[in-house]
Amino acid sequence: MEILILREEDILKAVDIKDIIEADKEALKSYSQGKSDIPLRTVIDVDKESSSTAIFMPGFIKDKNALGMKIIDIYPQNIEKGLVSAPSTMILIDRANGFVKAILDGTVLTRLRTGAVSGAATELLSNKDAKEFLLIGTGGQAATQLEAVLAVRKIKKAYVYDINFKRAETFAKEMDEKLKKYGAEILPVNDMNKILGQVDIITTVTTSKKAVFNGNKVKRGVHINSVGSYRPDMQETPAEFIVRADKIFTDTNEGVIKEAGDVIIPIKEGKIKEEKISHELGNLLLGEEVGRESKDEITWFKTVGFAGLDLVAAERIYELALEKEIGRKIEM
Image (cartoon, rainbow, N blue to C red; front, side, top):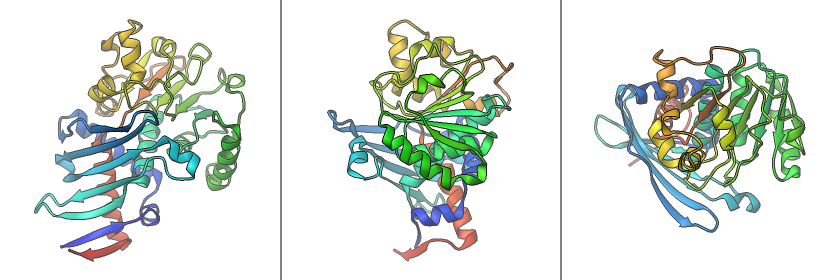
């Protein structure tokens, strides 16, 4: 049997962020239609003090013939060591015979599909004339989060905030050069409160255990993507913002309610009811939910990620890599 090996550079040659945004949309629809067999991921706490975690994410998307598993390890302290904070490997299995058909760099896959799902939510939920964007967090997931928003909205100014301002400066400089084709000015900010009330879109991508912005200061009409909280003890999104939100969508209701401190904590505190977290983006794509109905509505998208996004994105990457003759094949 041949196995196709796809490294980071191979994957980035095979696809762009828009390819993965469309793949993520298909994964979301398949999940909401019940065409996916996606068990809740297995999470192992390797070191609670440093929040080091090993995550195993298997799944099968029936209508896409996508079968496999991603292994991802979250090591926040790696940033300080100059290492990737979420190293990962994706294994694709041939549905017809059960053999492994591809091994992909799961780190870049995770970055692409996670950024892309925020891009899909932004495209569906934010105001079409949005011009200003705030990205909170500059870790390994940040670059694709930024690019995905720029790919779906004509952003003029993209602000970047990090608790370490030097990181924000370095990141903004790198992204301003790398993403010039989108025409946005990418600016680091030392005090986000100065621009918090004017931005149209916000994406949070941190591992914080407390709110990273003031939920009362964001304006009417804002759309927010909350990406970083994937454990019950993490809460980067303030409860007061969730209370204010007019429309809330998730990647999967089950995953968000069981795994994300962003909603678990305020539900336990009685600030919101679980019923408010009951709308999936896949159902919006299928026309079974109503999205933004006015420019003044506040919309929120919460994602914890699920294996379906990885599987459909990986399958699309695999198909395009074969078509373009990218990657290296090995015999097993």
